[in-house]
Amino acid sequence: MYSKSTFRGVENMTLGERLKFVRAQKKWSQEFAAEKIGISKAVLSNYERDYRDPDTHTLKKISDVYNVSTDFLLGKKHIEKDDNDPILNATFNEAIEELKKEDTLLLMKSGNIDAETALLIKKALKNGIRFVEEMKKKE
Image (cartoon, rainbow, N blue to C red; front, side):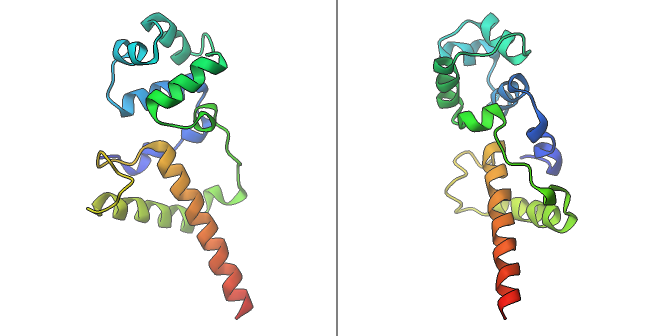
């Protein structure tokens, strides 16, 4: 299971740090991951240490193998002003904890929530909170 702090800082990671992060989430060795991607362990190591960047074909292959989007790997995310909102963060943390307990949650194939899923859940919560605020204004 992930701790509440697992997803903190993911937004600020480099490509190499994200590659290492998602590989670690799968509990794969560099050698195993490199073999699945079709590259050498040394090349993967260079990517993870930010010595080199993968070409677009390899980046797509990595995203397929790790089952994350290329947008996630590249850190493409809109930074929003309310990222430090304590109510939103508390709501997000509570929601993640509840989702971890839910037996029938279909998107948790392994019983864990990966970083990309957590970020998408957070975005959905933000949108939901905004929607509720707009509905309150109309009442």
